[in-house]
Figure 1 (cartoon, rainbow, N blue to C red):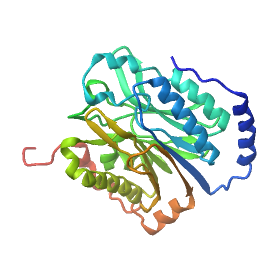
Figure 2: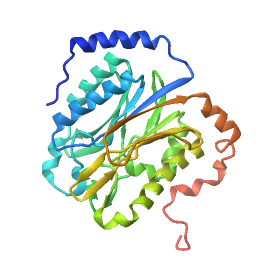
Figure 3: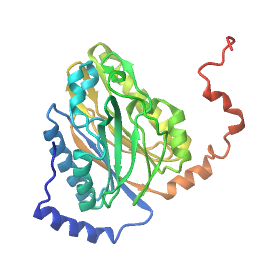
Length: 314
């Protein structure tokens, strides 16, 4: 069980933050990404994440996102039933603790969790906490991989709530998780719900056998997500973990890009750090006016996207 304790300096800091809130530019939103090295100790990871969040808030971050499954090592490298003990409900001890922190600092938090929905049903999820501490929504990962060192199908039931955006104090936020980032349909559906910011909490790395092509993998990962920003005209923020865990080396490189896919800020590939970026909301409309991809879609011609294959065997 994880607990969060309010301290006197936290309350003093809260009043300082409130004073700053009164002077916020209505066109600017500031995003913070927490690139972490995760351990096998959930309490340590929780306390580390909480401190990083405080540090990001001091730098005026308003929407802060943690990496996928940040409370533990990436346990999906093996299939082991003992790891189900890491799961918890939403709301639950971790989401409740971070809800207190979100309310204290008046920030929006995106907290990825191993969710136990009911007996026998587990999800790779993220809870979106609004700046008053309330739950703005929960996203459950839709695309579940099953590859060497990424045996997620053993643990996670695919999400069933679709692709959504969630209204928060600082804008409409959509969350997709890791493997979701390779599917343009998911990003497009999120954009069509009104998302201004698309977050990808992630745990991605390479095996030793892939070392020679690791730079190409990282480049493809970055290009794919930038393409979602461009084709949908929104801000994209992807946050990864770092360091080697068993057979995987997590490559970091967390980044934030604008609606035209231009990098605003990017982290290193090998150290824990916070990145902060200011995003101008009017760039969304300006980009969509200049590059009207949403306007020019031929929705009358896409009906076959609901089919697996369009070959001659149909």
